Image (cartoon, rainbow, N blue to C red; front, side):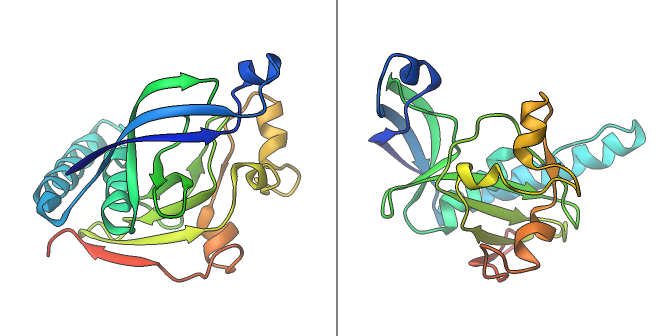
Length: 202
């Protein structure tokens, strides 16, 4: 694992906007994973599968670990580091998952273990690009898709026939919709092909 500190400019936080700032500044610690870390990824995946199997008996939903999906993006996509913690924040936005030091992109990562996905969003994400990780084969294989949307463009995403993402946010709801059906399958803002395919068992 590689540890690194970054200092970047971001959009201003809501508080920063109220105080008249045009941008924010963020200093944060981030990690990039290496091939040598693969056994830890496999252990996390196996642990999740066992927990998932046990949870089925109790009707307990067990989500795919964020450490797994964000971790493989920060291992397999060139230049990407996983955000760990803020060290200094001057009215910046820090609600993101990863950062690419080569392209200077702030990254959101979403993942699925069921096909097709039904991805849930919390209010206020901040990102320049979205990576979607498909673990639905449940055999250690995964695919990483790049979806070329920003957090601003997400607002217009159709959640159903009548509402957009932003409509539901305005109602105080957590929007849910399929990234596969919206972007990957139709090739909208996405090539429709994975930018990386991996296997935790190899």
